[in-house]
Image 1 (cartoon, rainbow, N blue to C red):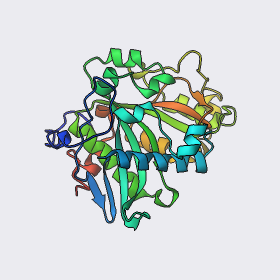
Image 2 (cartoon, rainbow, N blue to C red):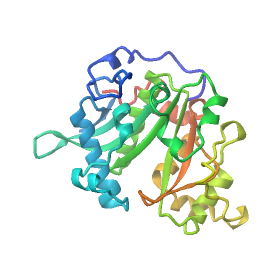
Image 3 (cartoon, one colour):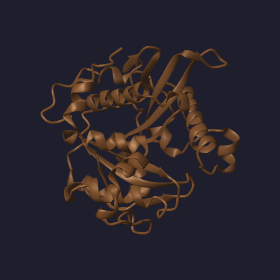
Image 4 (spheres, rainbow, N blue to C red):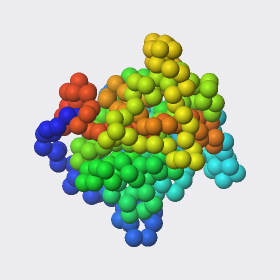
Length: 300
């Protein structure tokens, strides 16, 4: 996504159609298109268009975060079997749908999801979710005038953790970035486990080899900061470190993303989080060409 960027495709008009999710007082509904953003075979990527689809995404997140991984559910979460919070009502929800797999109700199955929060929406509500762990305010202030997008709650069902599913998710995000003229993407990415010493290799690799330059630097909140430089550079086995990193983080790094200063332990989700900062203009040109400057590679 290097500058200069070609003309924006005309998605904005279609994004003014029919979203009815309940919103906090004073906020307008997030606008989204009913059309798919991309398709590979039976898999389609698009934004959720109804509260029912958002609930399905929350159920998918529950399966991955609470049943497969080690997140700790409160009583309400256990009863509803949905991963949800107040941010869901103001976010767009990107979905990967498998038209060859049907639910008990006969609907195509949702097999992957990403949560998207634009800065203009966050500013009218209570800020970014990421701000609960990282001091993102100074970053946004330093780049006043740029449009930020927060990525979060990424998950895919185990059978669909394949290259084409990941490509569809990124195609959907790239389409969204183009439609809303996003300049910077941020978001928490997680390492499984809450013992930073057990994650010393991964954290040290990210600190020494992927840390953001000063202009894009973001620190963990003072009360939550966990040092990442647990090993000196010469003690890092590069091949082993890369192999140990989660695929999502490796994908971000391949795109050209940076990592913030310090990690945060999230005990509810059983993870150690790092902050991803991805200026659109810094994204590897190889991936821009792959998906198409105007997000046309997997256009439906």
